[in-house]
Image (cartoon, rainbow, N blue to C red; front, top):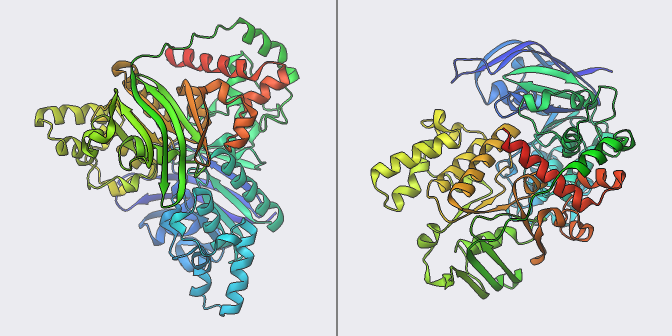
Length: 567
């Protein structure tokens, strides 16, 4: 096989930094390979991707040592235009990638730059849109389509350039579980049918391994720690040691005292021979005790027969449920199901078209948005829509100042929040230099500083590695337990729902189709199918071992709680 990417003794330091971000990188990727680049935030994986697609050194200036060749081109001596003829990139933040006023325009952008004749251009746009399944949305506005459709549009825009290498920077970050599976399927299809070299930069290891990858490059602190197969990586302890979340099924089997060798087929739960481990699984399961369901405390919010319409479109239809003090609840469902609309209703950004919302027995229409903000805090999914200050510390201070808190209290609250959120060393950094995941931490901290009774977090873990994910979640859980703050997680992350919540409320097409204990929801096949959730690998283990899936998920949740309590 011929090499399409070659790093030799390569190091890179950003102009604004004293230390090198990448150190002595030696890496060869061959034509037609499918490679996952894995690592915690700050490990250097995005910088490595930027060296491959030419953003370094042409958009981000700095010092380069050694050699980086892409399709035979020494990148520091080529141009970003020349490199883009070989490498196509789908960014994590697809909104930042759009330039057209419609999906069709955006897909056509590079063709227009190349002055392709209009008849040929339209033909190419249609062909690319069909490959990714966006042919019916060519006239849609990019900012009005779902996260999954945005990913597809960005991908279509680079396909017709017939590049050899496709680079995906966290392609699953904004997608619901079913859409994430579709995205992995689409990437796999393009790899197989169009013989592209595929590079995927992603935190969600288990989701990427839904389809085969040839190699995994594990990075940390700017260095390549491992260049190996998925089976060998999963059999090691390198994931947790380097801030990466293990697949659920690996954690579950380890809970039962099972260890692995690099000869075990671990990359796919479907290929894993559960019969080899069945005796240990059953023994540990039968010996484990599950905790009692928490007794519900004071009722904070009542949602009664609430509907909401965008013009004539019913975004929510006759929704009813109650929220209690100190609960942790996952609000789940596919993109466009109505989850974010519900969040906006609860914090008063929009108000019900029909029905009633009560806060501690009082109609919430009596409260202004500012007054509701001191009761219900809302952290939006896209951090760029919340950040308004230039410096991190100033961003955390803002809501407190707007609510006229005393200066001494502001100073103490800001310091406490920064330390608990792991942002204190970065308190004087410009917001503009932060990664997407770091920006999310700042927005969460800015709301947490207000200490409201209810906090709604819209996709809090998107773009977070396991280390920072755990740090933020432990911080949120500490607030929940110490101050009885009710937490609603609007999320696509089934790991989060399983590990950190007790109850799940499920939406699909504006309707609430489930409200129950999380282990019951995630073992209900009909709800999983209707809500475009993903059957977790815990269900697969349970079925193969002859255990009731609901009981097995409940058991796993208790095991994880005990592990967290034990440090």
